[in-house]
Image 1: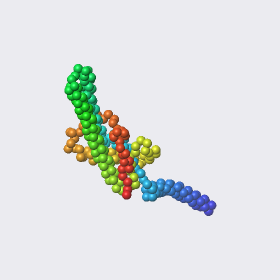
Image 2: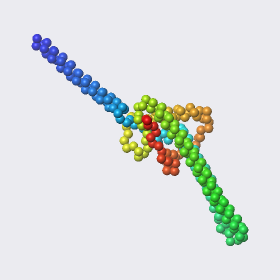
Image 3: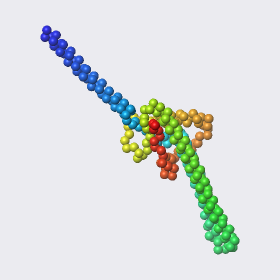
Image 4: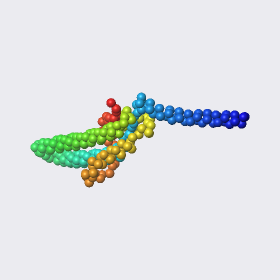
Length: 229
């Protein structure tokens, strides 16, 4: 009788501690899941992507960098050539001015004035071409990012998707980083559009121009790319 009692007590102890252990484990799982649910349903889930990584690895962004560098080189070359010509004519005028007639002096001054105006007009035209291309292409890239984020978040998982830039975010949960997905989606979409024009891609090397952060080119970039209504 005592032996049966001891066996029964042992079984009860085993069942008790085993159920307690499972209960604690289950509570941990439920707690974790409920936290995710609360954050998702009642809180604001924010995803982010690294803009520097997009600029460095998105094909269209790299093409934009190369084209901006080409335009900048063209601008510097043309303006430098005109300035050298102006300096040459100015030096010649300074050297021969004392021996010139009144008409020659007037003609030389008019020529210098016209050349100086040409320098200013050329600089303004090239600068406008540079800015127009930059703004138009940047908007095309941002439009592609917004479209991808909208498709990516069809399930409503995130309330906001932002671009992370230096000085903007001081803490981030890497599980909310969608940079890899974004890059794959952007390059796949853009690649399918560029296939017929593959031979026309620029071959110039990237030299590290940061078109997102350059003060000359960066103009109040919209950090919030997508948000639920």
